Length: 210
Image 1 (cartoon, one colour):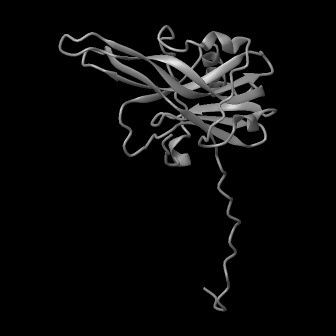
Image 2 (cartoon, rainbow, N blue to C red):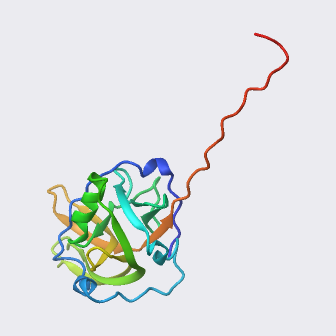
Image 3 (cartoon, rainbow, N blue to C red):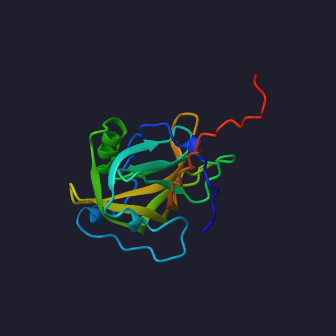
């Protein structure tokens, strides 16, 4: 897997609603998340293992307007980001986005806009998905489709008891707005370290009166 640079906190603070994707083209395994625990991904991955979020109370979510990053804020004042492996803010390449299953989207919208909502993470894991990638044919050639295996962050809330998932997509559109390429990429979970607060500095007296 490729290694991605660390994003600065200033890039991730602004809420940004995300339009749900066309789920007819993705998530061949999505139905299993509602009742069956997804298989854990046991490879050397970036970031931290998602089970670190288990037991924490999710109180707020932000989605960056400039980068494909979702930040999760918890009641114990910890926060985590879902990021795309290999994403470079200076050279973003094809448009990338973090997408979710349809049932998770309204929950994220609530947590973006309603400070009273609280969801407790009861289970969490890093897993793999197999989805259908697509590239439009050129110069009379047929369209190409293939199965793309990629990682995803999966978790369950105590309050409603179904599995949810976040994954990454790459997409390209032509001048008419038609999708000519769609693929998938790996995501990972990163803990956001808080900057230490500086204590007020006392002004030193130099022995002279101003």
